[in-house]
Amino acid sequence: MKQVFVTLVALGSALTLMAQQLTVNQNENAAFAANTDQTDNGVVSLAGRKGFSIQTQKGDFVFMPYMMIQTSGTYNYYADEGLDPAYNQDNVMNSGFAIPYAVLGFTGKAFDKVSFNLSINAAGSGGAILQQAWFDVKLADDALAIKTGKFKTPFQSGFLTILGGTLFPCVPVSMTSAVILPYALNSVNPKLMTGWDLGVEAHGLLFKKRLGYEVGIFNGTGGSVNSATKTLSDDLHIPSLLYAARLSYMPMGPMPAVQGDAKYLNENKLLFAVSANTNIESENESTNDTRFGAEAAWMYHRLYLSGEAYLMHMGFTDRMHLDGQTYDFWGAYGQAGFFVTKTLQLAARYDFFDRNGHDANGFLNMPAAGVNIFFPSCNMKLQAMYQYVGRFNHDTQVDRDNDDLGLARHSATVQLQYTF
Image (cartoon, rainbow, N blue to C red):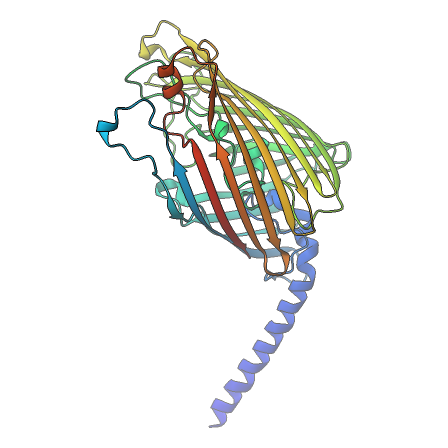
């Protein structure tokens, strides 16, 4: 009986000490989160958030878990695209409920030199389940750091924005949809977005954190591949990898990686950036793709404005036997968000996509409107949007029908998001 009593007392003392330590961690959590802000996990904002964390008394090691769950309901209406009604095609497809992301991860720092992050997306499949896994080593304070592992490639602010902080539940179509080529049988249909990838990157902030740079080398296979599969390019005789760089200027200090948030109603931040990358392939049925991008964003109190344009120059490998044929595709979008109240944000976007290449007439124009409702007390966010995919200036009706294949003419999405 005495042993049981001693055990209970010891257990109670340990729990008391743990509770005291967790309280301290919650109070200090905001300071840690303010330093890492959104850019450290790429999923949710930890800025100013008081949550659960584990750290040493000296603060030289901090471990903070986070979570994001998105549930959505979508209605997609597809046009007939000139098909005979006898085909009995379905106009309403890819509709219903979905879980775009179910992310569980942790981030932290060690010895004020190394920061780390790992996240699992349970809504993904294959290699994409491992959404990211990296560590970042500071070599010269903010001026130079080396990041290695799986993380976001430095291209397109619409993708570099944290997943839980976008203005719309769906990013622009011009970023995520594959291009269209004039070949009936073709295994090559790249996108203008590079996305997640495995690699190594040097980055930093210079001149009082007003000038940022990122220079990296990646596999170029995207977020669904977690192994080394590349070789040398037989066409260019260099490693078949993705070479990428981004340069940003922020005259008023670092720009939060969100497109408007209830926590940033008093900010005044401005960003200009340019980026470029080239994805070199080996001698297989693929292409060598070079991309360029330019972007600007302004967060002024309740107003958020941003826009970017990107271009891809695509050249087939010699194995495709297309006599050096090249194509150029480009897309752009502009968007605006305004907080009517402290928790209600209205949004509008115009998305443009030259999907069939500059050699062929016609392009897609895709206006969208949305509304966001924030619940700061419980870290919830409700988003709703409608998007229309229009077609303009095509030579023939067949060209018009081909240009938006796979895209819904009318699309409506409602998404509820919870973060921890």
